[in-house]
Image 1 (tube, rainbow, N blue to C red):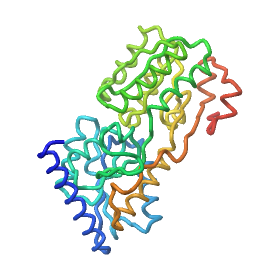
Image 2: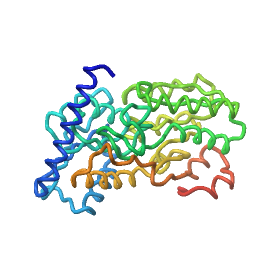
Image 3: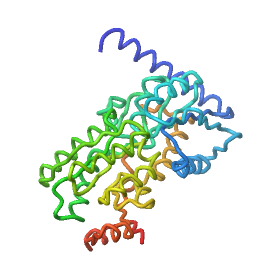
Length: 327
């Protein structure tokens, strides 16, 4: 790090320390919590989970906190501007969902604590020195989604022993999603499965990108965890259903909405747990001193109705491990 870089880092650290001290010295002030992610009505239950977690720690909207939803956006390209808005508003903490949102918040607001509800490896993303001692302005929960990506491919192989070719959907400008793809490609070599990456850049491209899978002659689809896909899950599931192919997802909500299978962290639990970090920061803790947590719980979910429609028999070994079975 050069002199200019060290100077910027020290300035941000001093600003973060001053803001933390100010919060601790003003316990009766109304704290401002800024939200940053790609949002849709489908994600409201997770926002409700965050609110429930905050209430459990004594925080009530309009009484001692204000939740700023003005920076919830419709697409990845809007995240940097939304993060800059939160920086100008000088919110007390930013709660971010997804690696791209975390990176945008870290860059735009280095003097504001950022609590991740879920994201890829924060060390590889460059927003933390380590999980045990982040050292910067970012803390919270990580999905470690790259490791899970390979397991979702293994799940499809267990359901379909004959699987040899699989399409992989992802947003290609997310470093954590690219890391998940690399992990999946490594696992695919071991399983002797040929994978084909299919990029989706925005919500408007979902139908055409999924339809293009038809010419790849694949036997299944796996979907890498993405806030873009979570916010548009009904649209994505509908597009996949037209191909009559089994698919695995990184979010249990996809299975509840008609997807075949998912191996995923409990994102609602992560949003509730994020409130623990917010509470500690409001009480004076530095985000860089708060260890980043792994997912609280992983869930294997299977939709039996979808399996029947696809003509698949789910092996007993999968059903016995399943935490959630949609009949």
